[in-house]
Image 1 (cartoon, one colour):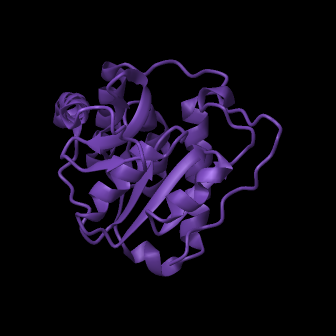
Image 2 (cartoon, one colour):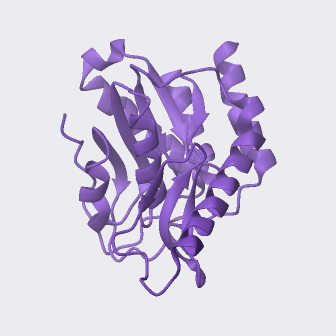
Image 3 (cartoon, helix red, strand yellow):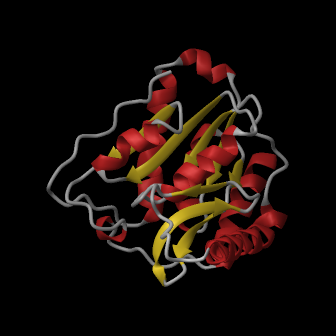
Length: 234
């Protein structure tokens, strides 16, 4: 199935008040997309957020679909000599993705293995922090939506999709409020459908398109995850 077409790029600034507003708007588009494909209403949906910021966007989407909210934790792998430069990403369960030609032949291989290990440990730690609030669900046979508050390079989203695909969902949808237009073909190669509210250019950073974009603390992320899933059980 071909991905849904993204919004057209624009040079003007697109701005959301905060992550909650972005999630509400994204939920409306997801519901409209589902209504155009009624056969998919028979399939079970599960929303997977990339924490921590992605949880606040994913919560309205999960509520609108009346489905569970879970997480996929992925962390960037950074270059050994420059911890600000991402060269790949890895999930808590060990799925890794490297940028092409990201490894320098002048750096010993063990330094890259160390960077991979450190990123995976950070992912595992965050997953453990969120584990008590996660629902008991499996993506197999479902329509799995991966949601974040925006995409810059696409590495963490791509590795999350790779990890999820291994668990055999019926479809994977990548759903975000904002992404740069040039990475759309890259995202489309990892999923069955892409839903992006806007793809402006120039892009620069995700935070540029939010009036309020504070760091989401782990306590807020846990509360968000717990509230949605308790509401489902209620």
